[in-house]
Image (cartoon, rainbow, N blue to C red; front, side, top):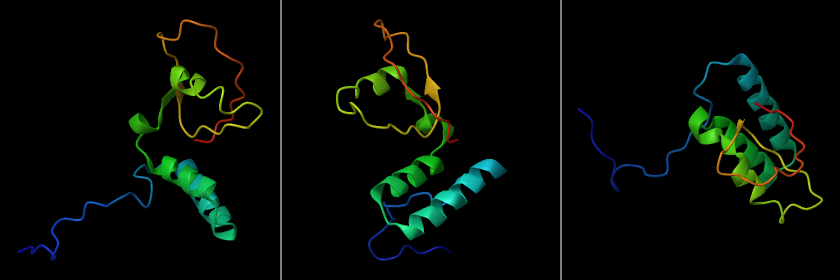
Length: 102
C-alpha cells in the first residue's frame, strides 16, 4: 500500500536524465554536466534542460527563431533540438548560423 507524504503529490518533478537510450545524446549530456560543474552558469543549465526534453518539445520552428532576430543582433544563438520549416513564414528567412548539438 502506498501512502502520500504530507503535502500531497510533488508538483515540481523534472527529468534528471534523458529518457532516450541514444549513446551520443548521453555522451553530450555527460560533457555538458562536467562543463557545467566547472562554471555554474545559466547557459549550461538551460542546455542541459533542453537535452532532457522529449523530441516533440525540443523542436523549434523557423518562425519562432526569426521572431527573436532583433534581440540577438550580433550575438551567437544556440538551438538545442530540431529546426523545422514553417509555412506561415512568408518573408525571406534571415541568415542563420546553425550548429547541431543533438
